[in-house]
Length: 115
Length: 112
Image 1 (cartoon, each protein chain N blue to C red):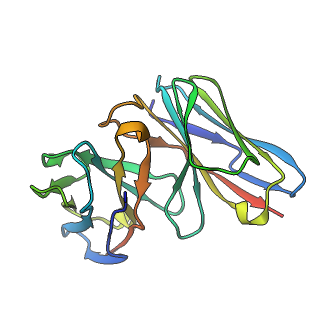
Image 2 (image 1 turned 180 degrees about the horizontal axis):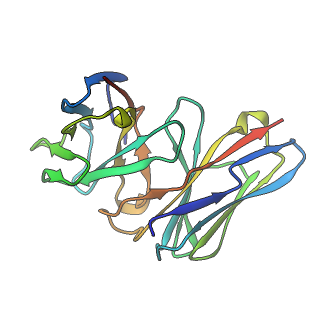
């Protein structure tokens, strides 16, 4: 099973709402990632979790709050977002974060619209 | 600078080989080159990766120049389903292990 699942597929939220994105993998991978992708642009890394600990934060605003409850799950908590945060949010996982040579498997993404 | 440079678009006839170039002139010795593709805003799909040697798998071949400053992804027999955005990426080493930096991508259109 090389699948990364993400829920929900689509999310519309107001600027005062609190919502969460969920990502799950059952490949035994020890690294998980959040990316943000705006239309017609490449994905941009937001966060990296390595062995359930946050290892890279690409200076993401605090209105985005990641959480890794266990090695299979990754959440992204959203609060007080802005319309410019509307994008496709992608989750990925890889076997070993601290060495090269391991591919990242991406989920299908959550398309977020902030109104 | 962890950038990669790719042509914005390319065309290929169905059944022919598609050769997609990538420039990564600032790549360091421990950085891998990875290729992904993305179809219709789905999640990116892994294609192939390499460090120094040329690589081949069931999807594609990767040719890396001896100085490692550029590489070429080869789809040997392109089909219509290969129409996608192809991203050449670098996997950073050191304290940034796990950080994939995507280039702008090449839109490959395969024509009948």
